[in-house]
Image (cartoon, rainbow, N blue to C red; front, side):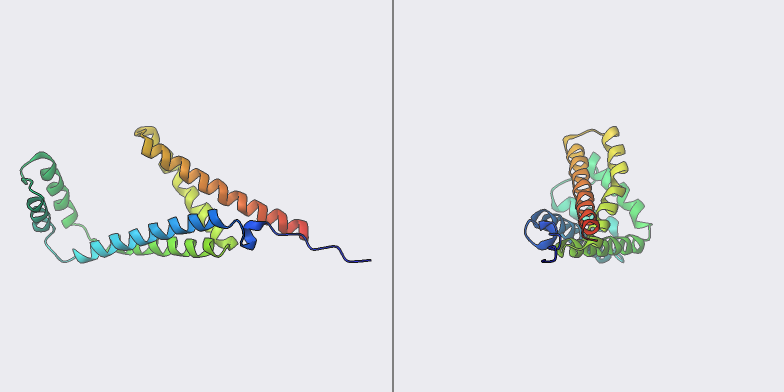
Amino acid sequence: MTPPAPPIAPAVHQGAGRGPLRAIAGFEALKGALALLAGAGLLSVLHRDLHQLAVALIGHIGLSPGQRYPALLLSQVDVWAHEDLRLLVMAAGAYAALRFAEASGLWRGRAWGEWLGALSGGLYIPFELWHWAHRPTWLASAVVVFNAAVVVYLGWQLWVRRSTATAGA
């Protein structure tokens, strides 16, 4: 009598069909890279006169600092100038590290990457729904739907992984 064949793992975790996981991984890596760029941008203005920088930028694009929107920008810049931006730089770095870790785990098809993606994406959904309820735009709707789809997909991947593991035990 031949021994029973081992259960076949889902194709997504075998390499074939890993496209959606890799697409999500690429998107997460992009978010991490953008966070790094934002942190580097903040770091580059850390010890500079933000007000003067904003006035120069406004003048460079041909606007007058006295106009409504440039004046609003300058008032906000004056508020930021008195804040300690190092905390924001550190937060951007931590966020980027989290996104890169998630992207790495998803790219390699690791369960911890799927868990990290599902949990971190799920944390945003209540805030996105709150924002959507107060400012319902097509972009806010797309963000909620996309993030929910990613969380549901990763949750489904984890469920398939677990049911395959329990079936083989």
